[in-house]
Amino acid sequence: MTEPILEIRNLCKSFGALKATDDVSLSLRPGEIHALIGPNGAGKSTLIKQIAGGLRSNSGSIHFAGHDVTPLSTVQRARAGLGRTFQISSLAMEYTALQNAMLGALGREGRVMRFFAPVMGQRNLCDAALAALARVGLSDHATIRTAELSHGQRRLLEVAVALTLAPKVFLMDEPMAGLGAEGSKQLTGFLDELRHEAPILLVEHDMDAVFALADRISVLVYGKVIASGSADEIRADPMVREAYLGAEELA
Ligand SMILES: Nc1ncnc2c1ncn2[C@@H]1O[C@H](COP(=O)(O)OP(=O)(O)OP(=O)(O)O)[C@@H](O)[C@H]1O
Image (cartoon, rainbow, N blue to C red; front, side, top):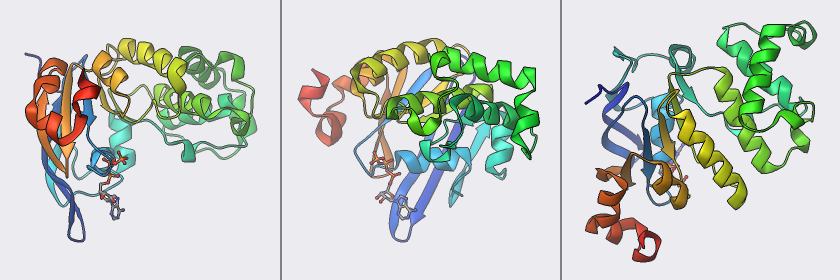
């Protein structure tokens, strides 16, 4: 079996008395989509933040591409290739879709943006940004201000920004949220291809997408992984049925 590119060992994070993540271990192998599911408040977003570096863990370690990245900052982890989809709140609403994607491409080069005008003239950055927009189907919206894009289009723009960073691994927190049926279907098809470029740790509430995409699914409840396995194993797991999914969602 292929060696994991990302391995999380015994991660814990408490907020006061609340154990948001409690001894979580999981791995991500090249080419796979590993979905993390669980009820609201189970600790999924907390775990993604711990892996990306936005939240310091109380204990445990994160191993990425053969290195212990636990002591590294968010920026250092991103530069190493640990790519988190940007949250909508981090998009610059007054900038166009293309400008936001170019900021991502600029981040990949590790440069600081001082003035937009000279940057916009740089063909390599512009090409990388346009290519990323094309891949998520936003070519026709490149010159539209982000504030004027629909919620679903902004979510696609977040994915495009992540693409410009060419990460070795994607950490995605609910990329389907607010996309609607057609948008979810489109993004599902895209993620299915993207996994071959870089594997994806996917937090997602859209069960159709999860069961269509995931090679492995881990179920988090009250901060603990209660089950991990293939879609069929998770569907059949009595603890999962009882704790979370409900018979009708698994039918
Ligand atoms: N900064 C914080 N301070 C205090 N408590 C927090 C903080 N962040 C998260 N929590 C709590 O930690 C628990 C896990 O939250 P988290 O957002 O990780 O869950 P989640 O599984 O992502 O939920 P959802 O599916 O609703 O997004 C919740 O009880 C939440 O209220």
